[in-house]
Each structure stands twice: as C-alpha cells, then as structure tokens.
Length: 67
Image 1 (cartoon, rainbow, N blue to C red):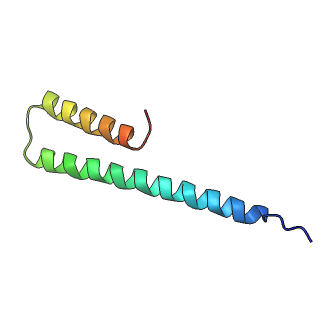
Image 2 (cartoon, rainbow, N blue to C red):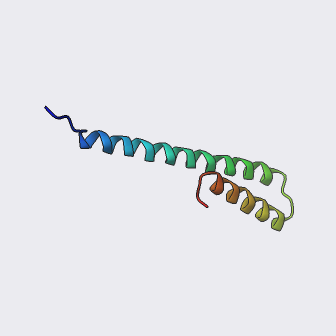
Image 3 (cartoon, rainbow, N blue to C red):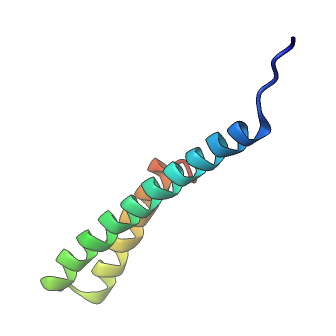
C-alpha cells in the first residue's frame, strides 16, 4: 500500500510557517515602535526623529528579508 502525504498536513505546515513569519514581523515592528517611543520621550529635532525612524524601519525590513 502506497502512502501519500495528507494535503491538510502540508497546508497546516505552510500555515504554521506563515504564522511564524508574521509573528517575527510583528515582533520587529513592536521593537521599532518601542525604540521610537523612547526617542519621542526625549524628542530631538523633528527631521532627526523622522530620519531615525526611516533608518530603523529600513534595517528591520532588510533583516526580515524584505529587500
């Protein structure tokens, strides 16, 4: 008798991987927001704050593999 993978198992695995990726992204966004909140607590010049946020977000997106 030949065994074949049940399609639901494959779908569940894919769903779990997608969920884990989403969780990592949400975690990274939370880190950026937390850091931004700390920066806002001691506000620098507005342009400097924007530059810091852009830099942090860009680095987090690169870390997540977003290019």
